Image (cartoon, rainbow, N blue to C red; front, side, top):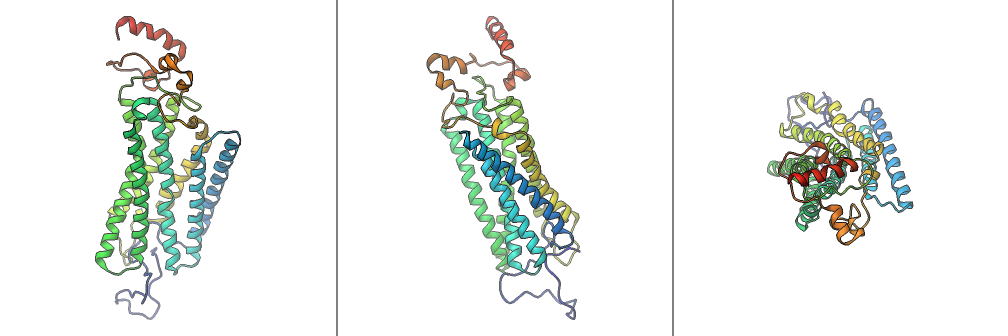
Length: 357
């Protein structure tokens, strides 16, 4: 059975209650996802993920620097580099914890880095979702209320992270049952909130596709608009799977160290629903070159900036965005994603006007 810390020493009464050290931090009394890391099992596996995250960090920083040198600003590459560096520290801490299994302080640091790192990927996906909404619905997407909504989400992400870190640390420094209950409630809130945030880009994109458009899609970056949606939805669902699994294991309730841990707390689940899913997103964003697909002009601050319509000025810019009156019929797939070729669109619009659509 995997436990977080060694049991009582030989010669102690096996029927006696677990003895706590005389001072904090105290070792946990419940099993955690992944259990106690061991040198024989966790060090080789964690070393592989350390190497993969190192490759991810090099790839995203290389892309960021090359883009910066040619005036192509894409901060999300730097954010993904930061995430990879945080995961490298997480892997190092887990390896150190494997070698110093009774050091509670190392266990605390390892647990905090595991919980905190993925937040950066959530923020990256929210930024991508915001750009897709602003492209599909330029006027409402650039409305101050929509911007305030995202600012509020970012503030809640930071505050929730602070609460999670504080609750996790305090849980190791108290034996008071009521305090531990409060800490558990805070952790459940934080993980539930992050699970919702991880799925929020999918909800935003779906809403953006369902709501009828009043203007043409403001194409930005390279590639088709629908491809951007597919990439974002896939990455968001991958991260949401991990977030939902983690919060689900906590809602199942704590498992005492005196019991054999269930399968959902195994090492395989820990690595699959944390590191494997995250490295898939990191590799995906390198392969599909999100730095080119999701890039927008610097200084974009209003409708028309993504497509360059504002640079045209006057009636020409308005004509670039407008598609006439809103439609009440069912739109085709090409119209939903605004992927209809230019020649077909030019032939289609006069037919609509003649039909009074």
